[in-house]
Structure formats: structure tokens, C-alpha cells
Figure 1 (tube, rainbow, N blue to C red):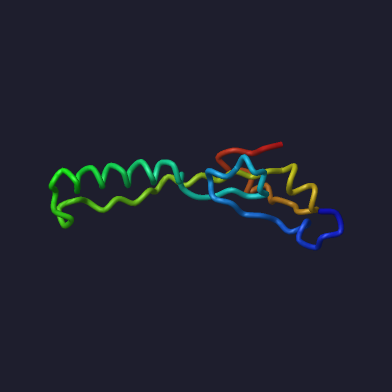
Figure 2 (figure 1 turned 180 degrees about the vertical axis):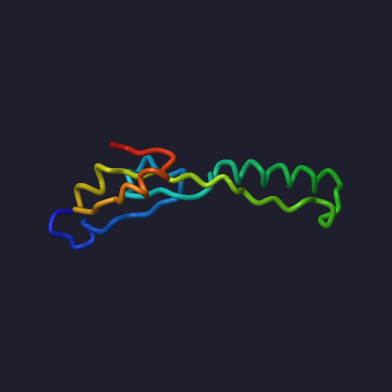
Length: 90
């Protein structure tokens, strides 16, 4: 993508897409969400009333920072942000 103005933009992906090498990946796990949705479906198909099935909210957000991607576009990630990251790709 040489010469493309979009090639130097930082990217932000969901947590499960960190393998695509975004500058920042943040969020909950899509795979975990789907697994919990399947559990709710099993309860409903088993005869539970929708009002009796508890509402679940995923609260375990993950932050992955990719220093290689950041460096390649000239972005500087502050040390305080690096300290809060769950994982850092170098």
C-alpha cells in the first residue's frame, strides 16, 4: 500500500483480532461472547422463560499494543498507556 494515505493511519481492532497486527486491539473476547450466547440459547431451548435468564455483561477487557505497527507509522505510545496494556507486541 505504498503511497496510500490510509497506510499511515493507526488502526484499532477488537481484542480477538490482535493477530492482524493493529496498532491497538481493545475489547472483550468475541469467542467468549459467542460461547455465553450459546449457553443462553441452550437455557431457552430447554424451556426457561426469557425473563428468568440472567443478563450477562463481559467485563474482562484486554488491551494489546503493537509497537512495531506504531513505530512504522511514526506513532508514539505514551509510557502510561504501555503500563496499562495486557500485552505488548514488540
